[in-house]
Length: 338
Image (cartoon, rainbow, N blue to C red; front, top):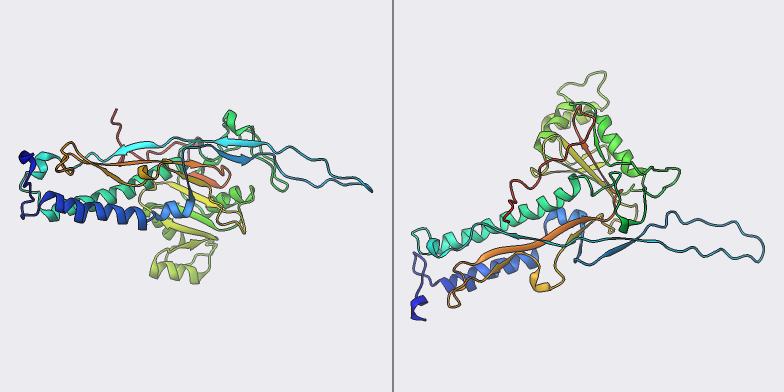
């Protein structure tokens, strides 16, 4: 036991003191008090169990005669499920690093801040990966567990089994017509409440350039809007969509997600975690030395994202191609470890 005693940082603080008084409390506060904005916006929490949803189609009234009662209709349920993925940060508190000249208490604390920052990036990438890669929103494919073979009708709108929410604009140049077409896409399915849009700075620039510095006769926006963009830049809201800029969105892709009117709490995605509360959030797993568990400890997170309202979102790729191309979302955050 004496072999492991007295291990300290370069500024003379015992490694256990740094672990129990600084590192673990920071992780605990992060897990309990912070929720990623994208997760709060689009996701409800769930575990790895099946989610059931009604695929019976539109409920209808029957026209009845005197003394008649409506015929009960069987409710048909579809199911969806995903297991969590296990992710481990590939930079940790190795023995060699903790014994190096860099292992001050400040640098150890800096590592936890970096780990938390990268955990936010991981969550963002997992959620956007589910949204931007085909197979989440309607794309013409259906699993046996879903039961349905086409999106259910809404109002006067009927949909075929090949109906897709992954489209190209047909032009390498963004136009306002692309955004209005995206809105129409989700509204056709009844998602007429709050509309949220995601794009990166590249697309923000493109929208700002659409406004121009001088109003032209063909510009379909007022001079007041153009003046505002010229002075403040594009901010927040355009064509009834609340836009959020994030650099985790790839160039030339736009995502719009709608909500049911009056049912804003019904979110289109599920944030999948382990059922065991002890396996949720960012976890620092202890290392191999019981007297100093920080040595060779590692940051682990089990999570996944699952779209359950497949009609609520639509993605457009700004491209002259006619076929949608899946972007690479997780490459800068996740690498295969097996």
